Length: 589
Image (cartoon, rainbow, N blue to C red; front, side, top):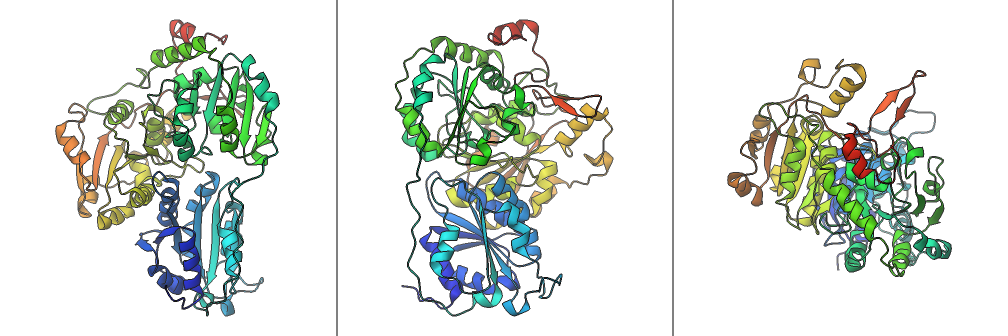
């Protein structure tokens, strides 16, 4: 048994008990003792920038296919924490687990309320993260281990989110304390929901849709795979649940979203019942025109968070505050007589009529159609692959519209904060978790914001295949400025002052092979050889700077300056009348 030398060792021993195995960190003076303690017990992975430590830990924890091991982020005081706040905010908005241990100055050097700063690099981390953490604590004394454990460990049935421990330097090295009795959290959340009124009326609905959100775990779906396959009506997923259902499953009808698949949006909007389980139904899911979400449907909303259930911009008939798995376990056991043959057949026909790569996207010269690229890439996926489609911009939206996932894939994005620069750090976290191939897609503009982590990939020889959408800047911003301001471009490309590097030179400087993919050559044998090995590699995907990204929900500016958006089913460009007549059977357009 390892001897506990100090309080920092004791806290690390607690983390071992809680299945933490990895630590992503940037070293610093105000975490030197706890870092030394961590080095004895965890695989400690240095990254170049603190934000990457937080993103990598978040994605490591989210990629829980084969292991329950956890990772945490460790950063020093002052800039170490301020650099990390974006990652904390991202995990908070996505309701994901993220433990951050931050350094702080010695207790004797802590400032009084009237001072801005006393200790070197001192800043009040607790106040900074208060609005984006589930729990937080400054360790300015040796708290009982059971108290720290209860702070870190999030009980089943509680909405997840980041936990922040701010560790004063002298307390890290303080003598160990006597362990207190462990207060174990309850494994069985209490539920007092009565679903009987909904279940009794379920058979009255003719066009139901089950919409699964990120609150429905991969393991639950895997354990109940047959039951989900036997549901006789459409199943859809949010982006955060994209990998729960194989895209080829017969009842799977896609990912509806403001930037979603047109066919999924059209089907969802014609349902007479939408069961939204484990999703908060945010504006990206309902559309900014939330009044037009599910215009023909009764909406059942299942979420652990009462505040989400009672938001003003939702119209729901049944609200159930409970764990998604508790609801689904009872729903899957419900006798569902197969009365939905016409509805499922119609939904399949809509999916066939409305392609994932639309002809409205005109490709110029020797450039890729990004939708066609993702569709081709989908054809060579294997079940062990993880797909990380960054977290904002064209690379993310194209991937989430066109990706055809297979059973076993892990797909992770962070769309709530939608911060550029997430993709590579997220891929690093997933690669350390799975040890398998990670497919990372990102635009060149977003990638440039965190490109220093190429060094982390190279140093650890991680099996990350980076596909860089090279469109010379910020494609989404460029498209917005073109649509709403007549092409009055600002800060979106080289012509408007944006400086991007020579990507071949950058990757080669880190010793990572780089290949430019020619659309005429496609994903040929030479590509497959490089794609299928386990070495890190970058593939540059040339995309025209003026490439369009359709379909999308558009808005118009009203005379009063307000924006008015279309409902989900009316994406731009409009469907031809003869196509609309075939797919809008239950809607009067």
